Amino acid sequence: MREQADPGYRRVLIALVAIGMTTFVQLYYPQALIPALSRDFAVDASHAALTVSGATIGLAVAALGWSWIADRIGRARAMTIAIVTAATIGLVLPFVTSFSVLVLLRVGQGIALGGTPALAMAYLDDRVSRHRALAAGATYISGTVLGGVTGRLIAAPVADVSDWRVAALVAGGVSALGAAVAVAALPRDRPGAATASLPTGVWTGMVANLSDPRQLALYAQGFLLMGAQVAVFNYLGYRLELEPFDLPPSLTAVIFLAGLSGAVSARLAATLAARFGRRRVLLASSLTMAAGAALTIPDRLTSVLIGLLLFATAYFAAHSIASGWVGPMATSGVAQATSLYTLFYYAGSSLFGWLGGLAFAGGWTGTATMVIGIVLIASAAARTLLPCSSSEVSAQTPPRTYAAPR
Image (cartoon, rainbow, N blue to C red):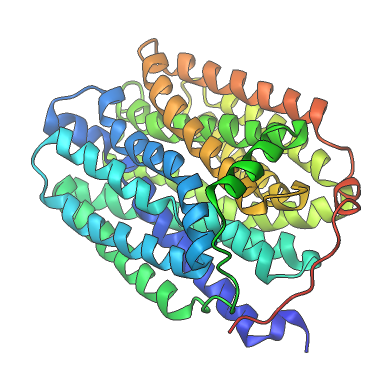
């Protein structure tokens, strides 16, 4: 039986798409509420953005801890605990009246969410044969794209007709539903999946990957490109609510539709990488991101929307390539390798999501210039340190066979 037709394989994909969706609904729906939170709590844009950065900080610091937990109890079990905990916190958030408590709960939610993206790619790497890994990873990325877009598109219009609390409650309900689907579909860990690794084993895996310049280049992609993406989506809505655009929040939410392009570009990137090599596709995607960001600078709505579409499409292609390359690139400590990518990825989100607000004090040109600069740095790192052909990586590690989930 072909792997795609295996019902166990389909269950893995359904579960991971649901995990990706519920994780990213929760992680990024406040992005569409930043102006509303700013008004309700009387804080500026950079402070309101802490509702996003707080969650990503929590996720970043928790990623390695979740990899250790997963080694002891199994990845599927760890992901189940993570999404249920995060969904529960999500249902509490709408009732918080203190901004400080709101941010702290978002940090806690991020810590819980750290158990999903930190483990999903490693879980796929273990469950899916190497020749299907690119497509399966892209399918998971597509789920994260849909989740991020869905959360933002739900939150902004609901907040526009009511308030941010109702929007948060709706987003929390959608996340809880996605978590239920994921728990029902996710195959249990195979016997022996929990290895009860000692902390020293985790440390060895971390050191091995942090000593590899190629892995560092991939971590740089996550850190810088994710930071660029979050900076754009955090503050572009603010810009469109100001002159000369003066758009209402329900219309500024349209910008998040650009993220839907990622559901297509992530899978297309996998196809192109198989034909032309991962490095070429990654570099082309980075340069397209920079060009798209530049097109958002002129005060013309058409230019802004076209630039945003190019930027978002290219970002998800680049992220799909970089995140899917980490596991095959690792010579040891695959779980630690993917968790380190997650750490850098969300550290970049937290840092540049905040710095983008400081740059925005000088107008959108300041934020866009920062974004272009960090994207070009990521491109330079990839060009300098990553191998020209993915075959150079696959030749270093033996192929794995697919074991049907149970």
